[in-house]
Length: 170
Ligand SMILES: CC(C)(COP(=O)(O)OP(=O)(O)OC[C@H]1O[C@@H](n2cnc3c(N)ncnc32)[C@H](O)[C@@H]1OP(=O)(O)O)[C@@H](O)C(=O)NCCC(=O)NCCS
Image (cartoon, rainbow, N blue to C red):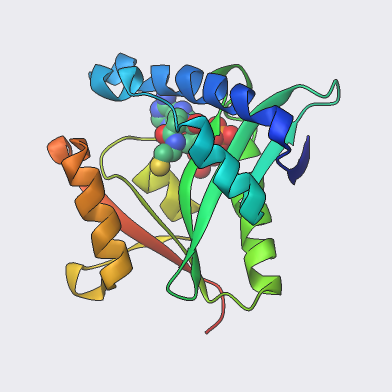
């Protein structure tokens, strides 16, 4: 598996990966998430141009996973990490997160953050095993609060959500 920066021609494939990865939520009674639209191409393009979109490719050069992030609060906020379910459970998600962490540390970024579902087995508990911890409400910065509010407006707070942080530099 190789991780590299996303290229413009990758972007439609990232939408396909997102739709396929979203199907995991249908099996656990969250069809609304499965049916949610993938990030718009313009959004993916912005991440790609800002250098905060990475993809994982197989030996046969198939793009099977991606991670997009945003610079917020002297940190890197993971907007989305998705692995095509045909390639799930092989550590690709971890590799992408570690790649983003390495990119962040070379830019003197102090932390990785993300928001996720508290009770979905491959979300909060998985990220804990990847070195993230759940933040208390009082620890949320204005930027993180704004992200949570946007997600609530989008209906994601129908299920318990958490904000998580992985410290990079103490
Ligand atoms: C979350 C995701 C990116 C992980 O990618 P991955 O390459 O499969 O990740 P890894 O191989 O590193 O690890 C998979 C982990 O998820 C857990 N997992 C996967 N499927 C699971 C399932 N159906 N039930 C319970 N746990 C599951 C595994 O136990 C494993 O954790 P562990 O290695 O610590 O035991 C991927 O499952 C995915 O794209 N999910 C759908 C989209 C999503 O939820 N994205 C994150 C939004 S915040």
